[in-house]
Image (cartoon, rainbow, N blue to C red; front, side):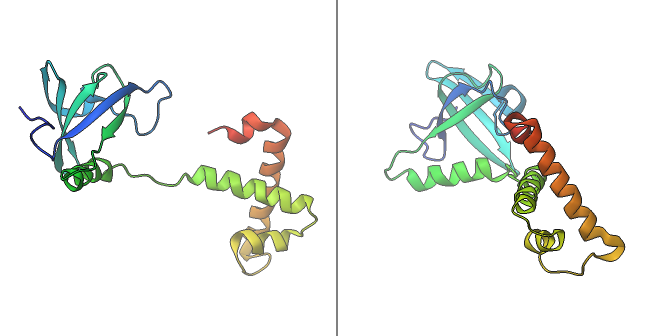
Length: 165
């Protein structure tokens, strides 16, 4: 068995239920390669990005469904080893920007520019950068029209629609 008390590469963590269904929720039942229980809590062996990470769950349970992990990082001689282990753990969480979010923001910006009286060409230059107008097959003009219409639609449907995934 491993323990954060004796090995600085073992992470100590608290688990809190993740009822929101976060994209980064941890599910010990699905991710743990090995699980040991002791009076001190749960000891998990997790594979991330081809590397093994050992975690001591000292509060809560990683086996009760998706949870949010909060790692303890004491500022002492173990800090660098702990930070390295956390980096290994989170390194495989491919956090990609949401293309849908970027498109929604562009649509809102296009609609704001339209309301401010900017021409479709000026909006295209602002959002897409300089380019041929109206573009081959009028693709730039068509894209800007769709963005303005999408922004108008979001505003007309209210805040809930703007914030929708």
